[in-house]
Length: 366
Image (cartoon, rainbow, N blue to C red; front, side, top):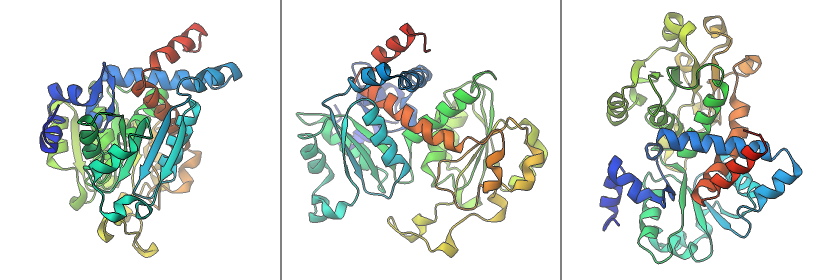
């Protein structure tokens, strides 16, 4: 057990300490960063998500799934605006029979009275069996996990987005979408992936890059304004894991030179809300990406028809609607996959994932 939050946070950077801090009995307990998942963990989560998706097609399968977490209560503590992520976690819990409560305005909670993170989550642990958090502070979820790890009733904490740092469940659904889409093309290994946008501050883009490092010989081409290029820590991590990267300031140039070899493009918006304070919402005239970071419809001829197009949403102008009839457009599949992978996360955290996979295997659904 870490004696201070600083040592807990430092331990998450150590491969050896990370599993001790974030796992219980060989399964994830605190879900905080993409780096905590090894290749085998990712494959297991993806298989569980597929099992849930296929069992859910049948009445008996749905009844079985809803028995898994019946009686469990999950708190969604969301301090930042969210539609897809919040509803996805609610739907995922419902698939497994758990009930959910959501607090989305911390001004109505004891945080408005100055209550500490530590006291708040220890209070919630008296009423709930897990906490899903989204917060503008990079360290909120980690601090909650540290506080609960030292308490008499530790419960799982799952980050649903931590400041500008990471969005681990989004990266898991993105990998699940890539794995599903590349099933007949050798899987995720060896693929060329373009990540466009505000990499420095887009937690979904950063988390995806960290997860891609678990696969063999991936190549990541970052395209971003110089001010929002990937930071040195991320690049060092990718280099250490033998992920080849390129840094680009022009999408048009990259696609003209290498478009035919690109397997997937992950488009993100610029994160202007961080320029207006943690809870700021930029004016309509301030939103959107500059032309050089927009995937323009005229680039279509530069890409293969089977190139995947992905976006974590919400989108502004960076991925125009004209792309929606492209064969590789996967955005709405990503949304749906978010529910399945988050259900798989709950199953893994509560230790019923093996039972779900075994049931699907017996019914020849896998």
